[in-house]
Length: 574
Image (cartoon, rainbow, N blue to C red; front, side, top):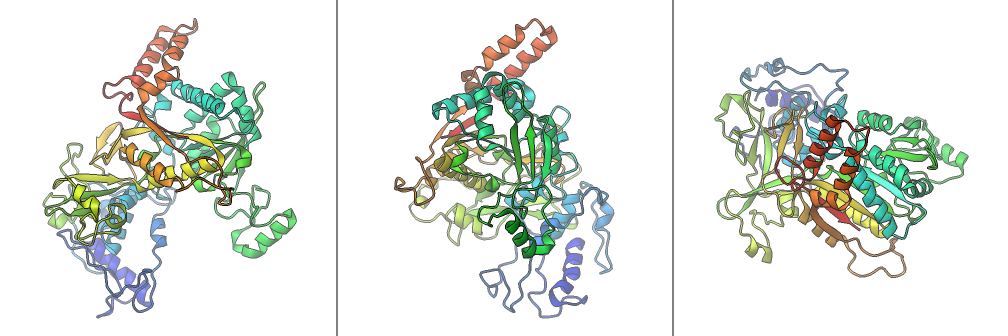
């Protein structure tokens, strides 16, 4: 396309140090664009394993993730962005297609430079691109709720969070009621679940708050700064203290680390002043605050992180209770499809060529029922050969056939689709290791199946399903959670033998996965029906409020679509 032609010309100077066009015969100066038929250029055999090129040139592509200016500085792109440039390329007619989003323009240029990308990479950039992702925009909290794109269980009724508080209290008791505890939530949304859980604990289970305050406090994993501010306000936090998530040189976790540009000198000065070393420096964090004391319950420190890896796992802080409610469905998946001849191929995402668009989308159905005019600017294609993900996640050989004994059990038929959530499996293995080290439990609540999900990748906008490649960065992209693979990943994370004297830095038994069970059964077992009845019977509850409580209870527990009772599952690691 014209965009790809311009990209190749403009990047030539980056490679050879000039503004001239790509020199003749310089095969490494720019990557050729994919052909209109959807083929992917073969990997250059002269490339080194580490990604550097034969001539000793190594291209840093990390900046590709930051190729879009923030919303505040950049007006939305328009179709005029695809007008012919100075290179004289033929004008591309995008009439009949969606207007470009901030992210679609970036993705188009990325694909023009590198070729089609995996579904997992597309998925990740759509949701958490630093400048133009769905959850990193100016006000991502607005996408949740009746006025947004989707509704989560905590937003349906306070009863959901109250039931999870009951589970937390019961789990704390089964652990022996330790006087230290750490609470963790992954992807807290608008903070509704955390608020309901803490409110219920203060009212009915104050020992939970006391143990958390004496232990590790509460830790929230959230990438979006706007979401963090919304969560902080929802919890009524005070004493907000900002930190650096990657380079904390304050020594005592202060709010204003020295300028990173000062480098080692600033680090050494801070460490000398505090008497600490780099090894015992407080872990990196984004934001710290305090939920004020209430009644007999002490104040509770709350810390925000960019990822689970920076949440402390010190056994001295007590067991960890982790909540992941509708978090794993937002983690990227790789998508594979069986082709004729018994081989597998990976689905990739490519840019549509409007000058040669026959409406087909290899590896997917571009005419999905959820798709309406105007047409998406991206399409699915299949990899022409095996890919790294096929080799590692599906154990396929160079021809795309499953290796070893497992190959004889591969009974998938041509056209069958398989999604593999590698990041979700890695996450539950991390949780399992934390549980083995610190003791505790993790509760995962999400929509999905007890087995492979098949072709579940989709998007949502204003509570309506949309084509997954439509308007990247402006719609929610999601996929069903494969709970069976999560349970297997937890089993795989268990050590081959029991720990001996703790020399491996861990203590305790290996974590085990329990479930999944349907959300309706779980909530009923934790008192959702009785709680709804108690609220309805209050003298202060109006008829309208009583009806709302009943409708919410039905939404959470009922097995009938579109309710959540069967569609959503609960998995516990302990």
